[in-house]
Image 1: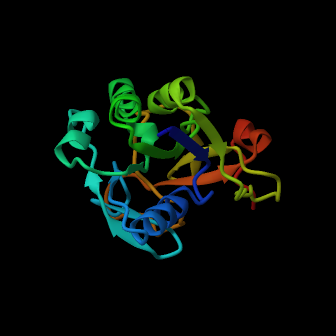
Image 2: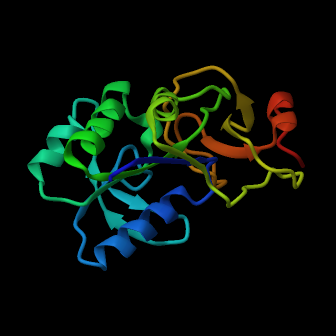
Image 3: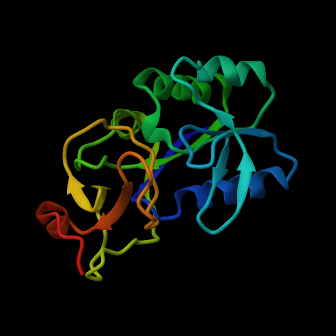
Length: 199
């Protein structure tokens, strides 16, 4: 019997790496499936900070994921990276894929946004998934404590207001020639609340 599994963690906790590993393991056993992503930092592929990547279907706001599964039928699985950006309707479509088509769905995403609030897609996945799996790779704050928050850093300062979706990375980079410098920093709750990025 198929199931809907939702695995979550902070940035840098290995979500995309695990997604790629599952895809590799299943496809090497002659099982056929779809790899999906949305707003990946490298475009229409799932990428890991470890340097591995695979082409993926881009999940756009209007894409019906149940219809997509029917279009590619027969398939055995769907792997959905960056599921926090999926709409409530798309999450419900994945539940239909499991229940009506008997296809396993592995979804991966962030738990909270830069404000410390659940993403819409994450909230729905927590409500409907058969399994909820926190990833065991613990990212760390600069102080050494377990990182629990993905802080948005704009021009060197932690911000708590703005658009929910703004693609960035955890790498420090040179200031851009035009516009704001945006990146994300993994922080423990105390340093997130204080906006403290360390030395």
